[in-house]
Image (spheres, rainbow, N blue to C red):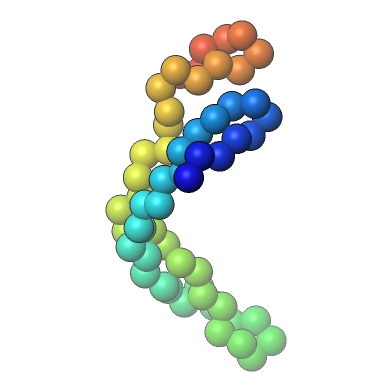
Length: 56
């Protein structure tokens, strides 16, 4: 499936990221957790430009 955002075409990536859930505290009697990525993929894309300048 090809997607388009503001005139730029791209192919979505469906990377499965393993997550673990950790308890970070309690709020009004409820347990508060967050999900932490174990092996997150690199989010940087080579060749990006922003207002004519190359993004490193």
